[in-house]
Length: 166
Image 1 (cartoon, rainbow, N blue to C red):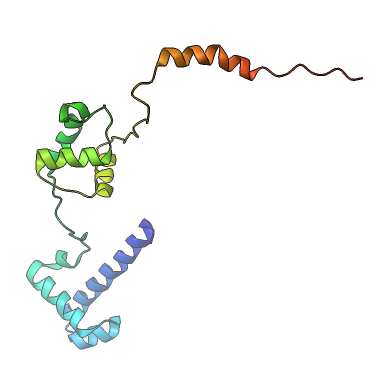
Image 2: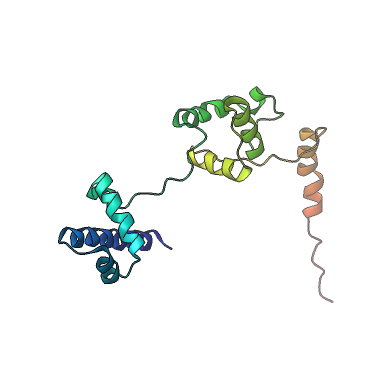
């Protein structure tokens, strides 16, 4: 469901709860309200209880609660500064941040474990991006590679001379 469609779906539900409250204020019985609005008597009963306990505002749409974040806002704001110290500051070899490494830092510093998928979301949330480590041999000789590229590669690239027609 798209965002606007979801908002409209929430709006009509809120309107229905408000209509139920208005009908109750006019003296309607809950069973009659339920029949008129096409809902169960139990739903109307819950709405009336919510309105009695929390006022009419309790009938308005509220965003779902969901689980509380395990990292506080302060901890989440501290994460970019930690990552800016570099991966080697936390004992990793090379200055590349991966989700696994970030998860390890979060666990060590804050004592919170996250799945690698969620670590990716957190990294995006703080405006960082992950890097993929380059796979290179440790004995790689950059000077020899450059020399080969300038000399041997040029010879390999030369095309054979065109044959003259008989």
